[in-house]
Length: 238
Image (cartoon, rainbow, N blue to C red; front, top):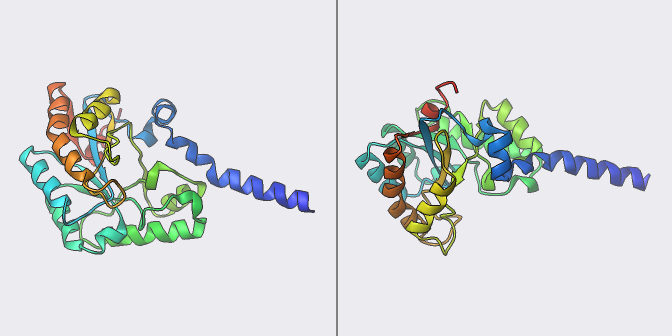
């Protein structure tokens, strides 16, 4: 009996955690391009996680407006609830809001029910701001679970990860290292992950991300790539 119980618990744990293998970016790019956010080869999607933050996000909005670029912001419900007006401002500027969860907690350590409640709460808050219902979901740390896949499907959300990131959350990151890390793997059709808040990152990291953005924008445009939100990136068939 004990052996059967142990085997059952092990099987349940494996089923729960199996989708987490998609957190490995190279394998995801090659095997699951839709999940990675791969789109038409003349486009690149620009995405930000962990906001909105009244200290940093308005600076990103101003810089993006100056460069005539729109992006997708994967927001935390707990951050958005502090300043829903900033969420409305982001929508009014032509950007997309998407779901990053209510809190930034790895879903491997949440039950399916808790995961559903977390995503539903964040989705409903985003939807209440008056824009379109959110379409996209990105789990904290990029770690999916079976419960997250089921919950996102029930809630009408499509999981989207990324093909290139800047490692901009690290204390050692610099504007130059962020640009170098993004562009080392970015190709046409890719999706960029950056952060507009340091709520889960090294203090002040958003400033380095902000400083890197003009160079990333110029890099994509110099190669004839159209930079925009996931909604535009995924709207055109491959």
